[in-house]
Image (tube, rainbow, N blue to C red; front, side, top):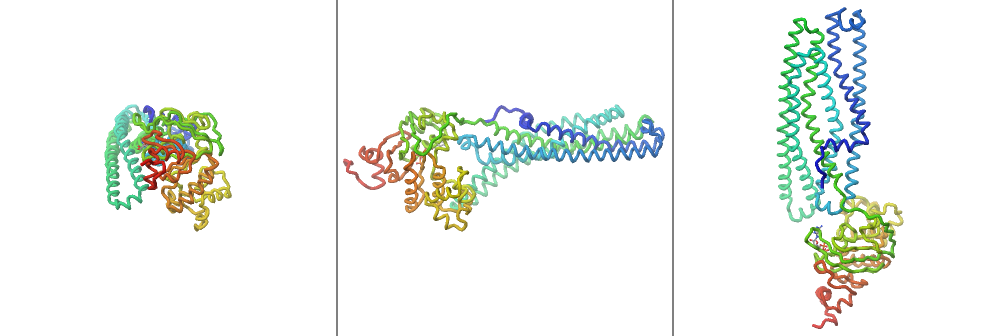
Length: 596
Ligand SMILES: Nc1ncnc2c1ncn2[C@@H]1O[C@H](COP(=O)(O)OP(=O)(O)OP(=O)(O)O)[C@@H](O)[C@H]1O
């Protein structure tokens, strides 16, 4: 959720406070560079003045009477001014470019760091493409503006002020005619700006939809191919891309009109200077030197003002991007860590659910009145029909979400009071959806346990019965697994994920359908390694196949979010309820307790 719309420039200035001194230095260099850049017309005026007025020239009035000395002074001033102009040009370029690099780096990193703090629910309601658009496009847009646009803005303003001042000093009448169109130009620029703002907002929106679409389709490329939906996907992208094109076309139509309009308005001022100044010079009311200065300066005014459109344009885009970056940075963190340390070691980890209720959306409870306790080192099976809330229960234990009612505690500490990092470090999750990062096997096993040695990584792999297949791979532990581990089989991926959990050495291990997607042989191997790992820690096993949890210390049977039954396999069969029915369906067995 974004904060109330504060002006983006103000938000940018607040964000860039640490760089304020450097921004001021860069702005000063931009100003000084423009100041010296505007001096050559004055030098031309002085040259004309020397050759026309000779001993009555401006220089002569300052005490330099000899013509040769006047020319020498003019040459010296030219070298000095051009030298200073070059020095300040170098300085402002280096300063602005380095600033733009530092700020874009910080913005990207801050946004990424803030994203890491946001709760799972944020990612469920926000498209990944939209997030990527902020981290890439918006940050780059800001970088481009700081790289060139900020300097442009300062230099255009400097030009208008200095040229205006020279005109007023030279001849208020001509200044009036030259500057007459200026309010119109500035009004026009702001008018354009306000018209462009929503248009660019729309363009940004379309870009993010386009990225979302791409990210989504690429993620499901195997499904696209298996359903032969390539043409459909092309048409979908065509539609999104068309929308982007249309949004851009509207922005282009408006922004393109600016330069021609401005040029024609400035022409009025230029003609005024030419005609009025010429007439006054002919009448002897204006020095010929000053007349030439004014002519050249009007030219100097023309181009920066025609570029004003581009600059305003760039500014506008940068502000739209800033708004989105700042919105992301200001997104409140919905899941605040508690302060109680929770240093669990294998052998600890008694879990208690007390009157727990939970709803993803208000009014639609998924879990209701859950009451159960898991002793430390116990293995607990959680079973129930699809959609009964098994995975949700695990998500609550990891505190991906907070309970709506009741409380969950580990070793007597309410999860909401516990330090979140401690809590998640104490819990290992092996789920059906294994996620491997695009890196080596070694990096993937060590993910989250970055300080572990190669020997420990290998030992974890042996425990997970993964070592053998890893050593058969061309580069062993250094084999790259590809994006999302695509180059490995499902069973291999699952074994790596188990190795990762073993290396983490958590007090509480959660297996969410960990073996449901693998063949019998792999399942047996995985079961063996899991049993080895499970016996010394609290383990929660979610399974559809009841045989997986048959030996658990207790089994929780969920039915539409409620705890329908609870007990050991034998107890539950004896109860002849939901569990017993499921067992019969899965095994085809009748039990001695079955009265039918
Ligand atoms: N992020 C979510 N937002 C909204 N509803 C959700 C979310 N995740 C799950 N649900 C809903 O919660 C209910 C329980 O889902 P859950 O994944 O916990 O069931 P499950 O018992 O693990 O199912 P399965 O055995 O199919 O994995 C389902 O009705 C599901 O639609």
